[in-house]
Length: 550
Image 1 (tube, one colour):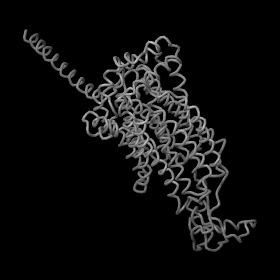
Image 2 (cartoon, one colour):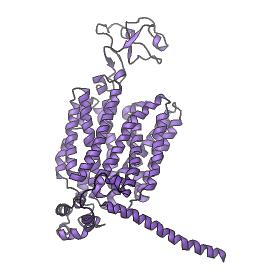
Image 3 (tube, helix red, strand yellow):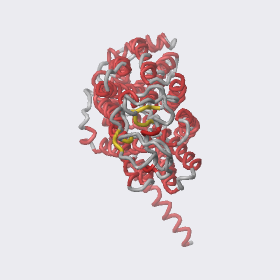
Image 4 (cartoon, one colour):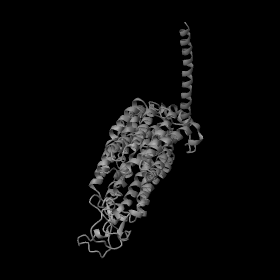
């Protein structure tokens, strides 16, 4: 409780905390846009083969003479006749317009640009035999997020949260802007990968920097606020994508503001908790005094001194010298249990989440409408999650959100395909539960890991989440076996992972651990409490038996 007392002394959740939390979470509005941006920039419009260049398209029926029809009577997307087939159309698919031989689209495609005037699919012809490249671009972005979680999570524990956050803002601004001007598909993928790396660092350091500056009683509020900002970002993406449908302008619009975030991030104050866990007591004192001055607690700040800090933070200074390495997550028994359980939770949440949100065109309704609905369901879901987190605790909230999400997806797998309203409603409900799970897992992970390895732990958790988001599109390919197989897999994984919460301790109202020893003590304290409860139960049972004998 020592560091929490210092925070309360210099103003608690005062003016500084309110300003810095607001400025740190503001970029998350656009981070949500980047994560699902390809739903719009890589949308696949209706298309068909382009006829030979010498074709006179001004003549009635000339275009139709080159296009075979599918079983629904629509032009084939990836085939054309080798020579024009004029005559009455036949209703049975490939025999339409005659029985002429077909060939792939050797002269390119004609796209319907009524909804999307320009996408990367249209610009680089990512259809038919090249359609897998569209998913490759999103997978490479997620690979970047995975790499960023590992790299920047570790760097933040070594160099500090503020420095890494500043670097991430600049990298996102530059790489995102360069993506908008990419001259080729490989260049586009390279810059998207770099954007994914930096956005992962922003996500991790945003949560950690805010949580480490907030008193215990406000941490759940901050975690919920971050979740709501991300949800509002999904609304923002739908509106911006509708207003700016050209993919290059849309990419530019969600990237340029990060230059402004980079400029004002220089005014952030580094985490005093990180300073103290690194043994830099002089910088801890300066940071606390600066915060006290901003919060209008000048006298309280002036009363702080090196001697006061040494007395208050004696535990951190004696047990937290130096930084713990990532190997401690596997070497230390207490950390190993946390790491394995949290890895399951991170993977399951992201795996099921991206299985639902990255196929908006598959719902058969307006892509903009479904984006708004998916964003809207987050608001009540995260409110309920916040109430459960604050009243019942982190562990019940985490278990319930994953379990309910999995059940909704599993039920969706047995609902008939023609029940589109029921299927969409279940998907939206499942997505809301997964959003609440994401909201909880960020806060829960930050509270479980000690300060000396908190960013590394968050980084490893986020890494497992990105593995889930990379594997998720591959699972959708199992629909070729049976249409509902992906849903059964997407639902079974979170249901199974929810059981891992049983092995995690509750953190509601508990101080943040600063060292690995704090985690060990928490574990021993729980065991000691259980032994005492058993001992108390024995006399009670004996007393009850004696009364029964009487």
